[in-house]
Length: 290
Image (cartoon, rainbow, N blue to C red; front, side, top):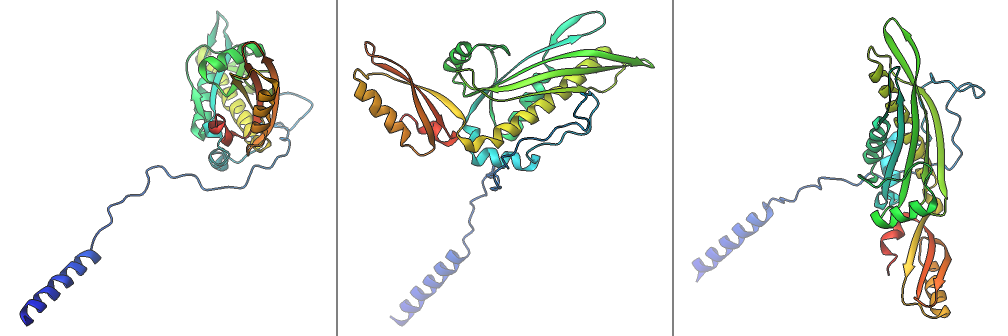
């Protein structure tokens, strides 16, 4: 009996030692959420050139309104990474022998917005820079777009020196809502590209620099205004054959956290369909159906 008790005690000790030496094989997450940072200061951006009375294509280095190291964190915590963004550009190159359309500015803009965390949609259809609110709304419904970045630029010859060509790009950009012709921001820039022995390379360099600067300016403004509930969503609700039902839905949406305002745009009593514009924070978007 005594030997049996010693044997059981020995087995218990071995089991306890084995349990203490167990290794936790769980690994750290591959992708870590960015650390929280302070909200962007909501102040108008400063002029990006030293001489405010003369537009120059050769300018000092770009000064972002929002520090580059804070952008990914601000975007993540504002839930702006939930938004689907469509970037479109109309860019033209004027060489000495020909004029053609390019996509250098578009590529630079797409790289910037995807790098900081936006969900950028690729492919067509893509609205023009001056598209109407009806076209923006139609494409948004077709492709589930939340926001548009529309760009336009023209690269033109400046001078030639020692066989090196120099080009500048005059560009404009705007962030458009999905309808109602409401702009979140609009920016412009005139920049000089790198000098090159090849005329086409010099022109495309100017477009690349233009796209990079416009993308930074526009993303700064999106982040700066993200806390204002500036996102506009079109909500279609069917089965509302009485006015009190429409009002019930409208008031219910207004009570949701993160919803800034709800406007009834139209209601068809015969079909029972109501169209509402909801202004909200990005974090509310995925839960609107509730």
